[in-house]
Image (cartoon, rainbow over all chains, first blue to last red):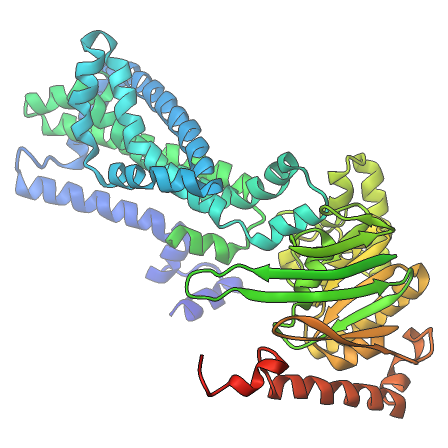
Length: 278
Length: 272
């Protein structure tokens, strides 16, 4: 069908049948629109307080924004996200490199990394809270974000270093590269695609960590708005904030993707695809 | 120029694999400006020998000297061309060719000018900005050759450089290598498993046999130089056929009668 639909487009003006419209607007937009319409319709027909229609949610979002509950809390949350993700990236890439380069470091730490990667991370929230107390609740939230984020970055960085093709390292040595040159000019660029994959996954987890931390520990930021709305059985408010959070997550992941594409533009497109599916 | 003196190398046992005696008492002298080809079946240690000369591999016994000095690792006097090309996939053709110079701290403008010369020499003008992934195998190995020549080494170490290429590309590159070598007259050690390639390129052919890897003979190739312009006539000559046939006969014997060592042969079947 795609061949038949695409071919005439070159010559004739766009047709107004279904495939012509899809081709013009793009299937992504169509999917979003269809979801929005479905949400609105079901919300209206069902008339359930816990499943409000989309229009109601958007209205509530406008109200919350007007009340000043969104922007300030959003900035607060974003600060947590940026610091938490930054620390996770620094720690994760550092430890991952050590584990990738030194077998003994990997053997010593492997168990902990995988144990904590699979552990239900939220159980650490009360721990952090009792360590830092209510006065330093930001540290607790950062702690939760890091616990969510750092291990996936470690795992990816470790395998990134381990998977640097041996012939490249050998080539570097044969041309008299110093250890420093070998690392900066061969190993690091060769490992970048997998490291970036780890950062991408890490960013998604960091957003989850941020919200969970804010909801369960300190009642600040967007987490606070969600908790408040939930306490008042304000389904529209909860969903409104959820839309904001999802937008934040998508933008954050997109930022990482853009950095990724700049750094690894040399990858053939099929390799990029494979890496994404992995 | 290069003296290899009773060189021995054993790869230690690993897991279920027994230790392997890759090289045993290998002695060889490589003359200055010589094109030496090393021929042998797989497992004869020819690549290990090259890697030791390149300084990429340790060894237990013997010595390797370049101009009288024992080697202790890679050096600027030697450059290697790899069977797998080993190009940096994120770097352009220019950057790959200039890589050895970059490691030596040569300024960017200077090393790129030098790289440009070599790119022209190997016939890749116009492809400077391409990435390795956008080139055919033959073109990639041209880059590998240009990279090695860019650092102007005294010795060119080539590890089955055309082994991963198709027959037609291989022939073209053999010819071009001869052209380049006849101009520069660098000392070349060239590993191959092809009799024709060994004879076509080499002044002498070192014949190696496996388990343990050792040199069984060094065959002089009495074909005239320069050869680049007469490759096709030469490859069709009776003399060429005679030498390659003789080498094949001996290689085939090695393959047919693979035994740990000649003196151990009678014990086979009796048990330890």
